[in-house]
Image (cartoon, rainbow, N blue to C red; front, side, top):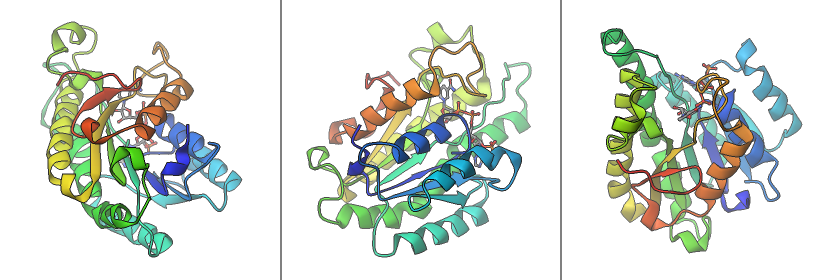
Length: 259
Ligand SMILES: NC(=O)c1ccc[n+]([C@@H]2O[C@H](COP(=O)([O-])OP(=O)(O)OC[C@H]3O[C@@H](n4cnc5c(N)ncnc54)[C@H](OP(=O)(O)O)[C@@H]3O)[C@@H](O)[C@H]2O)c1
C-alpha cells in the first residue's frame, strides 16, 4: 500500500483495536504520510500506552493528540494542535474510527444506551468532520496532494459496519440485535451520504467503510479477521478510492454493501 498519497492523516480512537493498527500500518508503510495525528481520549492513562510506545518509535511522524470525540472543547483543542503542526499544509485524510457499541436488544435498550451510542458514533464524527474541514479544504486546494487518479485531494472515511445495512438486516439481525449500534451506524451512513454531496465541489471524498468482523475488544475473540488483515484491506481500499466511491458503503475488500 502506498500511504505516501496522503500528506497527512488523522485517525480518531487510535489507542487500540483497528485505530491503533491503522496508525501502525500507515507509519510503517513503504512511503508513509508526512504527518500522522493519532487521536486518543486519554493518552496518559493505561489504555494510551501502546499508542505512546508506537509514537515513540516514529518520533517525527506520529503526533498523539488528546481527543475525546464526544467533547466539543476537546475537539476544538485537538484542531488547534493539529493546525499548528500542519502550518500551511492541509489534512488529506480523516478517519472517523472511534466508536462505541452497547449490546442491547429491544428490551434492554433505553434512552441512555441509544443516546450515548448515537453521540459517539454519529455526533462525534460530524463535529470532527466540521472542525477539521478547513484543513481538508486547504489540502484539496494544494496541487498534487492526493492521488491524481482519484480526481480528489482529500477524503473522509467514516468507519461503519455491515450491521448498519437495512437491506442486510434480515440476514444479520439474529446474531447481533444491538439496537443502539445498528441505528447509529445507519445514521452515520446518512451523514456520509450528505457530506459526500456537500463536499463534492471541494474535491473531498466521503466514504463509509466496513472493516469486517475483527478481533478487537469490540469484535471479540470469535471474529474472523485480525486487525492486521482488516487494516491492510482498508488501506488498500482507501488508497484506490475515486469519486464514484464517494457517498457509498464499502467493505474492507472494496466491495459495495447495500444501504
Ligand atoms: N471490530 C469489529 O468487528 C468491527 C466491525 C464493524 C465495524 N467496526 C468499527 O470499527 C471501528 C473500530 O472498532 P474496534 O473494533 O477497533 O473497537 P474497539 O476495540 O472497541 O476500539 C474503539 C476505539 O474507539 C475509542 N473511543 C470510543 N469512544 C471514544 C471517544 N468518545 N473519544 C475518543 N475515542 C473513543 C476507544 O478509546 P478508549 O480506549 O479510550 O475507550 C478505542 O480506541 C469502530 O467504528 C467500529 O464500529 C468494528
